[in-house]
Length: 407
Image (tube, rainbow, N blue to C red; front, top):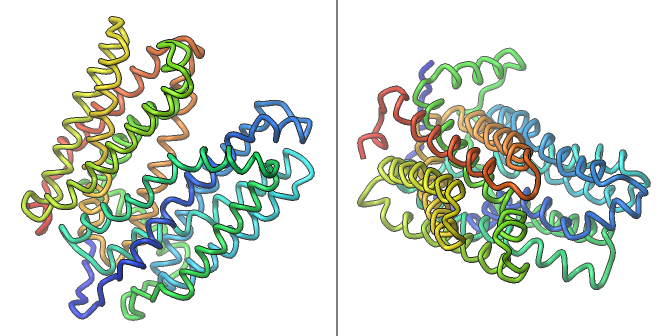
């Protein structure tokens, strides 16, 4: 099903303040997940729950996030970007505030599902806003700039959460998350303008919405690009999920050294994204996307071999650094090329990207620990399957079309 790209030559470009806001919205999920991780043991004890029940508050948020992006993306195509985004943020702030007063682990898990579903609006609509206002290499550069904000969230959130626990308990962390959401809501209301003209909106109810999703899934190039992007994220998430027990329990790093390695690898990811933002004008988004996928495939194979033969910490960290560097090229450029020709259904396309991303994350997380905390091989296998699988999926996709593909 072909989709008509929006032709809006007079569409105003985003101000730097708006790009910062969109980056913070994309960083909302890792902030909402990672900030309260240091308090998870005390949370489960305080609510007289088992550790496995406490994990449901994480699973519920991710599940809500995936579903919420589908709904918000379709609504934003029908009603514009601004109104669904504001409603979603209001719901997120309210649900997160309710988490702070939840009397039981089960009610907390349910409210976290609602928080994830409403918080997903910021992620999916933020990508659609960029696509409304930029095309081609310009979109890739904006996505790279957004990663300066987004990429910081998973690094600093646990540190902030740990420091806040010196002043408050787990309930206070949810108050802090609600306050951060309220600040984002205020910034959106005050500074972010509507980017989808009324003439470009598509109404028609559930049937038309499902038709748009079906059309996207029938688009071979979109499926190949989006699938490769999400599998590349799966390789990265496999490392993130397994990193603490692999590095600390198997390679015997101290918590402090682990934290340093994690921060340095995250810095590689963000730095390469910014380098790509400068190169994309000369090299092209699709070429950088392809280069990143090649790097991730090679690095994930290297990580698996290193783990299997006992290659040592330095060899493994070098492979992980290359996985992060590859994703620095893949994330902004893969998002840009996936949505390049989806102008009139950018919200729906963004929703499918988000569902795929968090769906892969939900599958990867339990698989890396399937053999326990003292076996690194499953993490290496999952990383390799995702890294090589994303590369192969990209190669088997339909022929590229449009200006971006020719670059």
